[in-house]
Image (cartoon, rainbow, N blue to C red; front, top):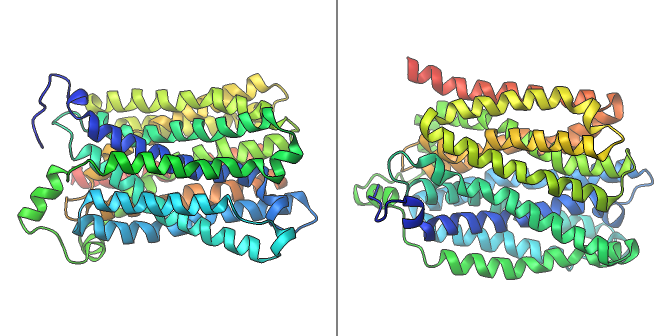
Length: 426
């Protein structure tokens, strides 16, 4: 760690923190415009089915495909991040996901090219997942490995803050389009504009990241010859407990987020009959509570510990699950907003401290691989399955069953934190 050159380390390291924030904001923007389009457009446009519920399930399945790709991307980018360096690996991950996103903008529909349309979409979605698989972990290390003593959680909050920023940019874009064009124009070509805009955002991200240098922790490990030849083999051989803990520890935040955003949007605009614009506004008004949860939890985590804040987040997930049926299913959008705001605030407590907690589980030589792999494996359980399982549960037993899914996810994440706590106590 390097000593801060100003009384406020956040100011002294502003270029590093800006790079970690801007990069993940762009990556999450790319990811969320797909989630929004999957809920609103991709079903009828790209998947042939008479039943709208089946179309939505197929669209969510393509959404979940990226979560399968993310651990693959984590292993690939983690290898190079631990062998070559954090900077160049982060540049490559940004290019892959940004390129895949832009190409989706030019994809013809099923009516034009038949089954080739959903196949190409799935390939591009897989590319998005590969890129994001190497992004979040590298951005977290960029921040945390530059943090002075006692500032790890506050530095580590910047990559998680990319989530609400990316979400606001993505859904805000879709909201503007919905207010300025007809439904026919939006479904015909308007939905493509947010994907095209990703090209400009990727250029900005590259400009910021190319100005960085390597982190002190990686430079020290390289100088000492402490970089393993095959980081993932080293990780699974010597850090299995940390890998399991990290994987289970992230499940709750993924489940909370994608149920409160992708599933809630699809359910609210189909089953509940709310207008797309109205529900997008409600979600945009709720998302600042996610940012507030991240900032508050990370500020407190440097004083009380990341595990304490994570447990508060998991408790909030349980409460959100129990309140989901009567509140998300309410006719009043004000009540829906209250539930979304609370769920996303709890998600901030379950998400923000991960930026510092996950890197603390691994040594510098395998840290990129460890953080990326655990974050994305947990994403399959908590994120990829969330909209699909939630839709199926809602069809069979209503929102109360979806709420129980959140309760189970919180229990699994609490178990992950307890794994490493028992190790520390032993």
